[in-house]
Length: 149
Image (tube, rainbow, N blue to C red; front, side, top):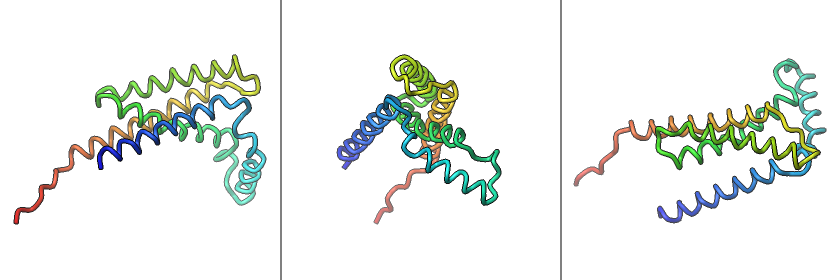
């Protein structure tokens, strides 16, 4: 049972990193096919009372970058000793910087941005801290022992 769970976890991790690589190194902005529809949804929300300062295209993109790196923080922090969880955040900052640099040099249709580095690093921070909290909750919970007959 534990071996099959490990295999499933490994497959999910590999799929995540393949998807992440595809997204960050796609030759054109990955949101281009849906940007019109996204703008329509945002416009509809504004038309129905949602304040313009609350949501906009850049905010949606920023939030998507945060969400994209939450699994990164969890995965990297899970591979480290508990006291080194912060290394996952530092690794995300370095990786994000390298991604933006690679996009600037090799992908002329992409627009590198400092805000992407901030969002990606923030997402890894959220993921790593979430893992720290879950680990703390798991270790503070008393173990249940089976009742004796």
